[in-house]
Length: 119
Image (tube, rainbow, N blue to C red; front, side):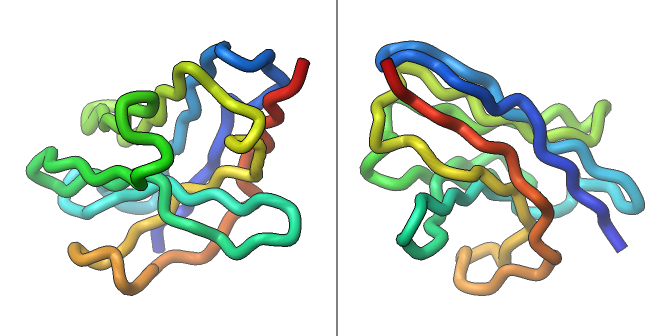
């Protein structure tokens, strides 16, 4: 069973950047669609960005043009580059393995990594 560990979060000022990492063990990520999700206080968890095994990407409207999802199959890691961060991006960010249509999540949720955007 794949184990996913998120890292790279932190406190950043509005307009700043962060790169999140999702490292996997126990399985090879390259054959799966992978995605980043986030959950802000008092809100439901939402899909932020996804990438298929073929490299096709998908983004929430709120992050298009600012966030970039990528994968390094050699390192079995998925990344989320976040630029031009806004206070409303503050949330705990998680990675997981969804179905190819993003309707179902197959993995267990990890602890996530906290991103706080504040001046």
